[in-house]
Length: 294
Image 1 (cartoon, rainbow, N blue to C red):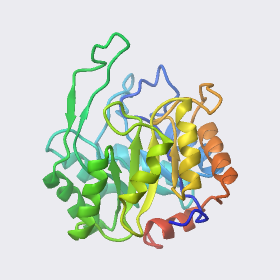
Image 2: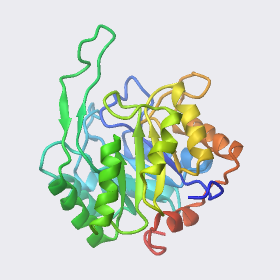
Image 3: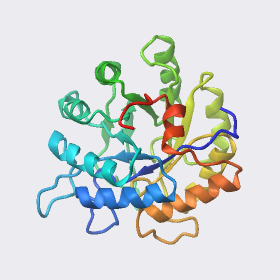
């Protein structure tokens, strides 16, 4: 990718299990739409969406209820004309019926495809586990199950890569005919047991990509992620931030929501000489059908 190509900016609107009573994460359809609108006005053309249990007093655990998901996506689309919906699909275990039902109900333009397995680990300061060690299992059979539905519905897979082996596997998926061109890769950096959020890694990771791949960074952390965003912009990558990924602005202050994070990311892109892709331009770059949900 040439470094003068317009940058597609994605907002990761809300996390998976983040407690909304402690952090500024939206839960309801109205909250998701309002946060999406702020991000949209700041320059984001893609909204990466997780979905929460909508029952009163809940909001922490994920929801795979198709009507809940549809209500949220419809509200986001109404608030942000032309926006691209990127739906999360990540679940542990072999039962993917919930995410598949949501894909079929909403037919988002893009959907996350977790492209390999990872031991999901983190230590506390006292060197005990932050949570019980767990396996985020994404074997090839599970990946093919998602791709069968995504390909049938015309949904563009966003291949999330948590380590270098997963990135190299995506290249093999493409060579084996599982993925259609252009392939969209996300480099997930900053997960404690995955790739670190280090700018020096980016040129090496780019070397492992096949020609024509679109790529972005997903950077998990605090203010240390912002120099990596800058390097990604300089190298021609697409860009993502939001309260799923960080709560902290480049100056170390805690954000009030998604809007200020996107504003900061857009400034970084422009300082690197990149213009920001409109939703229509983002559709062309990512290979989204021009007629899909436009």
